[in-house]
Length: 318
Image 1 (tube, helix red, strand yellow):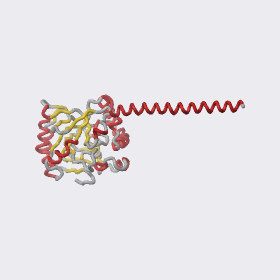
Image 2: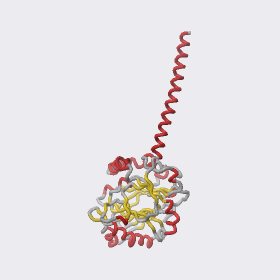
Image 3: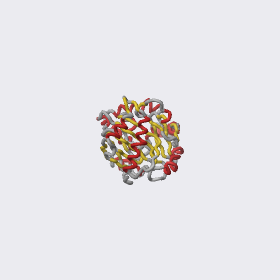
Image 4: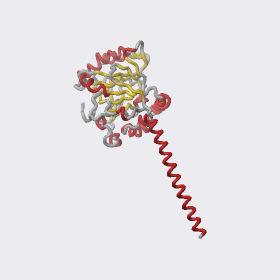
């Protein structure tokens, strides 16, 4: 992997037979996650080990299978994990398996920025990557990326293996710093943000229009704060933070075929947290204090205005 770019594309590494085996887990928009996990463990990850030296003895926390139905959380630039430590390189990866041709935008080098530099400077480095059926994409989980042109194809079947540690030693050293913020049950997410993003994502022009504004917020770690679905700065300190907007289920708890776009949890080492009310209280206090300050300024100005008006009147009488 190019350290400066933060990602690697393994082209045409999966055979048709291997791809069909992976796709056999999907039928009528339902997923047999047992087959999917066997595909990951027996085909997908061994192929990555064979074709690159990045991931040698992987441990992964979760995975997801989707087909153009994760546009609400992937159509604007985002990171899968956000690095709130002093380490320049995040030792966690995302591994994607493409069952159909697709495109995404990625910002090379954004895995190292960690809010250094300017958001516009970073945004202008974005590149379109065209991936083909049978390709594998690996990147540092905090690199800024988004799916594009997903509404122009009938199928965009994609396996996403999240929070992949390259070996057991790295897992043991870093997993205690990994925190997943569960946002799926948040009122704003369920009833406002996700439905709004879903409607916007249907129009490529609309999503392109807002993506730069969203990128400025994301780059400066403001997008979850403004949406009131973040956790406190204390909870994020020296942590790797991921945000999980979709439904989750532990692999061992699955009894029947499940829906697409469900987060399947495989390792229990990652900590989870619910959204905090920290920023809700912060904004309430901020606006109360701001209104008090504005009231005080207005009152002082009004008193000064009255004094000036009386003085002018008295001078007129004299």
